[in-house]
Length: 307
Image (cartoon, rainbow, N blue to C red):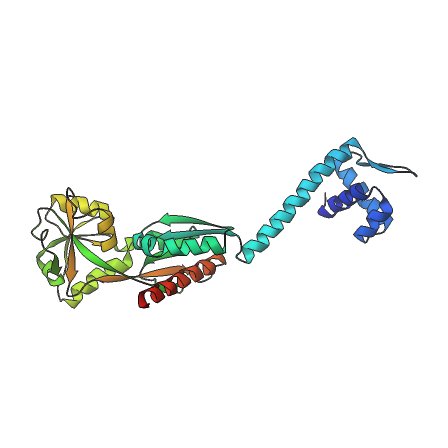
């Protein structure tokens, strides 16, 4: 069965006249009759009955017309959807993000994306930087909102206008718990808990770079791969962990009843930049549309601050 045979049959059903149907299709009557015969042969049923006075559909033909119209309509919708997706007017977009991005980037960008491109379905996945970059590499994510940026040529990136400070995380009984801030150099004599670098390379490197700037070496005695585990560990041992300030706030560190406290670090203040990262060969046009929404939101934020 060929698609053109369906079109020819539907045209015959509409005209109930081979001459007019052939004219609409820019075919000769013998060519149109041959197409109908091939269609009927492939189905094994007679669809059209005709004599010298009339052309009519058989009961099988009337039922087949309904189904054929649905097939043609579905193919047309598929073609329109494919065209819209190729042009970035429809389709799907999988975005990974971290906590600061969820607060400072996504709300306004998502609002603009919905207003400008309502037919693009956006799915959101909260992950740490390492898993997000892995998601970009395997194609499960189209865009990552992460700390820092990868150095590989496989990815492209754009720095976002938001800097995130890191804080020390200690238990309630730690001697730093009541201090408003601690010079980074005082970490020299502390046992630390740190995550694996692949979990968040930019944060890991920022912590070690700050140590190098103060000419100390961190004594990493324990490991934990997420802020929640870090908070648990420092609550029962005299350890110092690390977290972003937004994460510490979200976890209620320092509020009455919490078992851990966030302490500011200074000299230097370790900070991270947020970046949008995507594949260098990214085929999804919705990525550039979302980046435009982020950029326009940030421009408005800068104007509001300078007003």
